[in-house]
Length: 185
Image 1 (cartoon, rainbow, N blue to C red):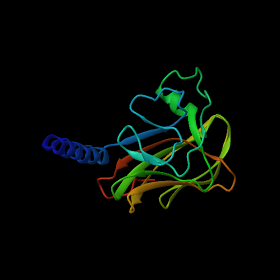
Image 2: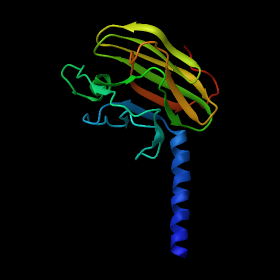
Image 3: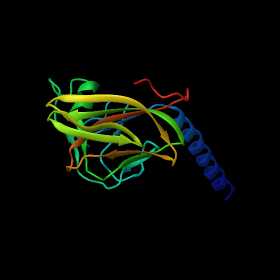
Image 4: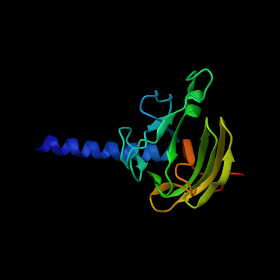
């Protein structure tokens, strides 16, 4: 019984240490299908329901769906990490949010949207609008970095488009903002 208590305490301590480490580090998530190799240095999101992932973080979608795609947009396809990041994406269903558990505070968030086919992008993170009704052409990607504040323990991405599946997200990079100042626009 005593050894079981020690194991539980050790697991709890590791969870606290890893949780604190993860909160202080950059998080890079690629929205992709399960058949595509995960780019080195990135974590995958397969458009699965919000919950704990094998990588120790808690994130996901309000509703699991088969919306992740690999459009093989790169030429030649899948030649490097950048090509995989551009080729993979997921459709954001209107009204369905994506969230990740984070400590409350300021975060610098970089988001890439777009894909091989033209689309109409409208997306906000927390209460910060990244794009609203912005049209992209075929093989056009938009990348924007902004500072957002998490006040409820979760960073939330919300599509703002009126049409189904118009906003297509490729990746997100989240870094704690240690300066307390917003990123320059």
